[in-house]
Length: 382
Image (cartoon, rainbow, N blue to C red; front, side, top):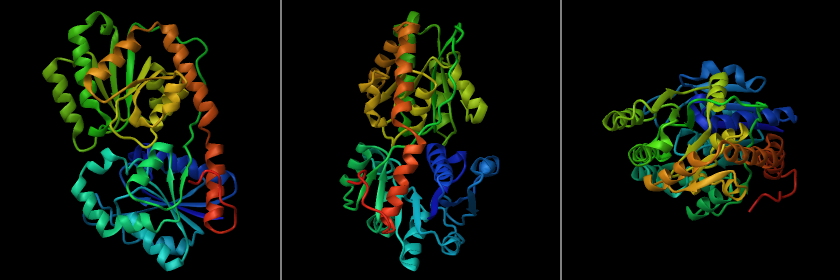
């Protein structure tokens, strides 16, 4: 089967969505599917081009208003490639328009992965822009999809709340498991790690407020800890966060390390003692799965859509307010190293059991077959 995948970004600039698209495409290719990927060019693509091999990747320059990503060469390329199924990873940009036009021209089906973009917080962010985009093209894009893909049950619920009645499949992404150190060496400083986009929805402002509160209220607990914030800036949010750190005198305990990839990203995970994600909204955060894969205990909100982590005892539950974050930080910091290690091991075991790229590709293959009329209705459809 010929599968076309479309994403606004096919480089590290796309964050977790990029990793899901890339690993899904590679695993489908390994299983024998003819996969082609289509995206918009950006500053990160040349660095990541080889990471797609042997999957064919096609990138197109956008014109005009950058956030929309209008790329006039995308639709002709999709038509020329003639996939049996088109899978669009994302909303609110020109690939949504191109997917609808491609389906109209070819009479073939497409799927849409929403990647958390229909969650209540995500819809409320830039609400009027999204309302206008919905009327102009996005409602049509969603309503005409043969199937929508949710990474977890709460995301499927968000799709239904938005008013979409199409079939929805629930298929989690996978994670590649690194080798774990047999006996990690003790460190003088303990690192609490955040890794992801530097965007308001990640709750970093409240994380810093919680960190500052602990500095004032419980200095003996937090004294040996440092907070590392790793990720790429969006909308100049990093400047706001740095300004807050300067105003509160947090420069000595908070470090902004910028984006890290490959061996550098592996290094920050291996240096960390625990991981935090105080998000207001997520689809299914790859960064949490990565943290568990390195055996790290996690502090996260329910909005991260990974209730399995709480049930397995691999994560502490917080909400996105600074007092709740502070309580979560205090809890993880006052644990013994052995207790944190046991918590992280439970997370590692969880991803080994439930988040496999092989399983992801098997489910996707069955959904594509059903969409094309060559296979039965899969059990993961709701």
